[in-house]
Length: 63
Image (tube, rainbow, N blue to C red; front, top):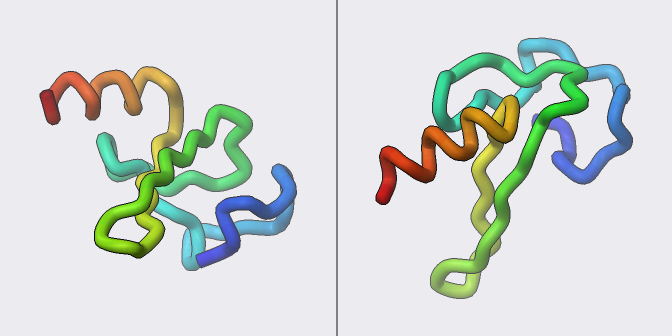
């Protein structure tokens, strides 16, 4: 997978693109791409979302 902190618009194709944690859509060159990062047991973890709506829907389901 490509570094999630890389510049927007960098060449990313479906073979190395992250999937949205909520809907499963491949996130390719998306300006609405969101990454949520946290530390758990001393390791960095992250989830990718294709939009704020998918992030909100995931948060609602997880509550």
